[in-house]
Each structure stands twice: as structure tokens, then as C-alpha cells.
Image (tube, rainbow over all chains, first blue to last red; front, side):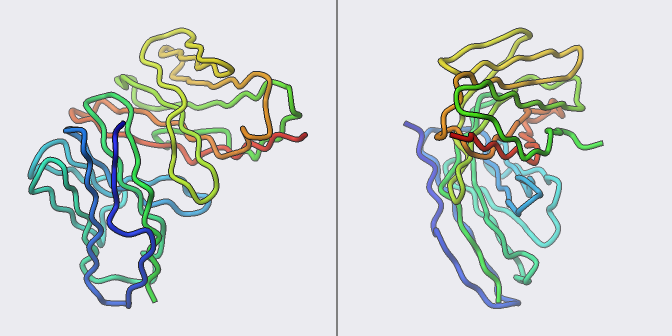
Length: 111
Length: 112
């Protein structure tokens, strides 16, 4: 079974902090994605990566950056956390055009 | 125009009836199409994938794809209370890389 693991289930951070969300997959998938999910807005793509060190902006990249130094790991970075970044963050991985598998999600609260 | 649009719902269906969920997409070059189910507080889980025009059946679920109309649907037969969830349509866009875009989801409630 594919396993996608996010480093934290719940996280509380202060405004202005630099926040790292980590995601690891164990299936050698090329593609990895970071989404945020807010009520009524569905899953919105922040960034995705199709190879090591390669990244593409999604629909809402502002205030975020990403890092993919190894194929299995994709990190989302909030450079200076703000209260409007309070959300559920979901990581996913996929091989090519095939289905994506999700991690358990990280519920981030910025206070 | 949004890349992936779903009927917003919420949708209520009596137990045992057929639930019909619809999705349209804007990129004609899209190659793969997925339906995910998400229970409250949980991550999305894949229930159907479809890659070519026509119908694909898996148990009580049938996915239908019409690329000419840029339309994907999901039918759930003999709906059960356990089918109550939010259903997300996802499309793998053909923008050179495999960008996976989701609709906003349709909340389905099965009424016993």
C-alpha cells in the first residue's frame, strides 16, 4: 500500500513564525502536491513538484515556498505565518497521470 | 471559468436510491479523471478513476466520462448511509506537467 506521511497532525504556531510542514511518500512517486482545504473552497493547489528540485506554482502560492531535495520528501514552508494561513494542509503523491494518494493532513492554527 | 466545477449541493438522496454527482472541466487536453470521497475530518480517498470515454463500473459505483462535452459523473446505486460524505472530482490537467486540480466538492447525505 502507498503510504504518505505528514509530520504533524495538529500544529499551533504564532504569527510571524517560519513553519515547516513535511511530507514523505514511500512509493517512488514522481509527483507530489501540497493543497490547503478550507470550508466551501475545496482543495486548492499551493505547489506541486514533478521531480527532485523541480516545482511548479499552483493556484495559491503566495506566502508559501516548497523544497524537494529528495524524491520521497516534499516540504511546504510558510515563510512568515499569518492568521489567514490557518487551514487544513494536505500532501499527496502520484505517479504520472495516475491517482494521487493523500497523507492524513495537518491542521495548522496560526495565532 | 474554474478549471473543475461540481454541482455545489448539498445533495440529499433516500437510502436505496441512485445518487448522481456531476463535474465539468475546462482543459480539453486533460487525460485522467478521479472521484474521491472525503468523510468529515479525514483525508480524501480514491473511489474511482477513469481515463477513456464511456462508463466504468466498480460495485455500486459507476463513473462516466464524456471528453467531447468535458463532463464526468459518478453514480452511486443502492445508496447507503455510509455513502454520506463529500465527493471531490479531480482532473489531471495537461499543462505539460501532471497538475491535479480538484473541484470544490459536493456534500451528499443519504437519508435512511
